[in-house]
Image (cartoon, rainbow, N blue to C red; front, side, top):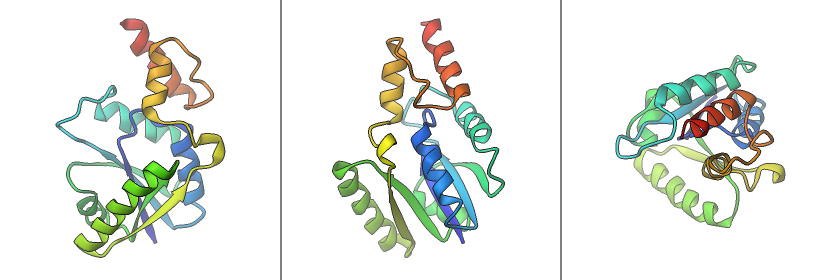
Length: 158
């Protein structure tokens, strides 16, 4: 069974990695799919996001990092995923993700596994990490070391 774990990963956090670590025990393969949205302007380029994820996930041989443009269901088809997996940090996300799961099932019949965040990571988001880093706060507890170093480079250059 192959699971698709889509997201922008701008940047990847320890919360994302916790979900991936849990997924590798549940399925045969995990495709971490980096969303490329031409209408958005992420902090990190797609190449940087893919490279940082590949480094962070190198310890899991059953995890592959890919990228996609368009609908998640199209990425699921492209990478032959049996299911889509989304992390849930709280009630607000649950409502939004339930709607998306139902839409994705209606579009192509694929199921979505909603995986609750570990309590230690339930407040951590990529946007929060960027905000803390922007103002010089300590992000080391929330992201892998290479991500922390890269964020420091970006915000020290400003």
